[in-house]
Image 1 (cartoon, helix red, strand yellow):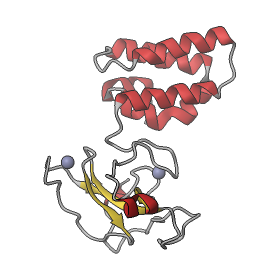
Image 2 (cartoon, helix red, strand yellow):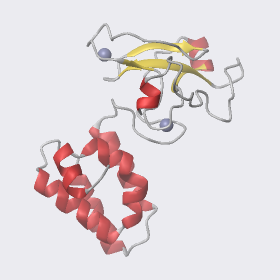
Image 3 (cartoon, helix red, strand yellow):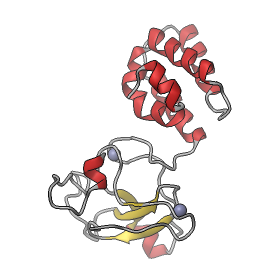
Length: 186
Ligand SMILES: [Zn+2]
Ligand SMILES: [Zn+2]
């Protein structure tokens, strides 16, 4: 992550900016690149090149402006080429279209929804899946206590360990830092 934040300086490696299937922006590529503040306010959704240096702060909320997925370093998906032509309003995506990690502004509903989708790919009995699904639904409430967060994730770990593997970037965004520490999640 520090590598990505330090983009524009010379002493760090350059992570790829465009997804591998679109090595650079051309009119035929479906999406341009965007800069978005960490609260999700779009700044520029029509970029055709990698921005460099300090991108400044958001005029609406004062937060830092991001140009990359904080997980994999790929550009944030900007406006679709066709949508730009049609003059459609741009809404920043909640998840990275390259690695699937949530962007910092992803809402709780979207995050839990993603966990539910990942759960469907796990193998367990239908009764186990139903119970875990109900557990995950409880995480939709931002007020769910730390103790409950830990119990839910421990049950996930015992029942569908694969979900911890694929769902860690999502759980990181949903759980409190104290719950993450006690669970030993990065
Ligand atoms: Zn903002
Ligand atoms: Zn990514």
